[in-house]
Picture 1: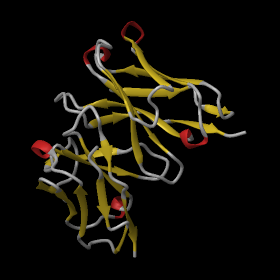
Picture 2: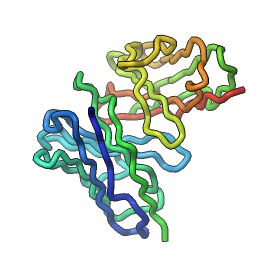
Picture 3: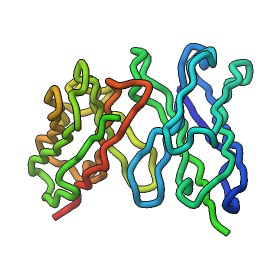
Picture 4: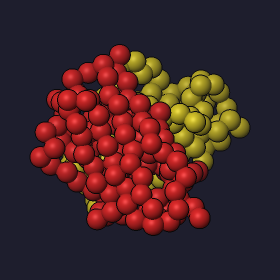
Length: 120
Length: 109
């Protein structure tokens, strides 16, 4: 069974940093690109970042470019999101999401999400 | 960036009724790379439809998708109590830059 479990969320002050993790199991993690998607309270979904299976290709939404860094450790079946210079508008539930095995970037597996709150 | 606009924002219907949800793109979505998701409160999104019209594994056939170019539709033929939720469309034609629509809430009338 495919499982994605996020952790690392919490309350942080504006300008602070946080590192999210996503532990993957039930599939060959090293064969899939992975993504982070976020959802502000009461709002819609926003794609944040993606990383290819071997970390060769990395992409970010303009809203986080230069502040967030995505990475992965295939030996540990883990995905990470380092978030720096956090702003109030980064407050959201952050989901890790796995693309469909067709290779196209729609998501058939999601974690349960981890809440990041940026507030003084 | 392809902007997706979903309408209506809220759809008030009764169980057994037909729901028609719209997703309009600001430019053509290549190869109908359009997906639909269902999200219930406190839960992660659930994939319903991909490729504009292909149902994901385990999705009941009361859910159907159609459309191409800039106009896409999700239809729920007869609403079941568990179908009341928020629905999002997502384009992946301009991958890796992915975008979601703002969502349509289907609520009980």
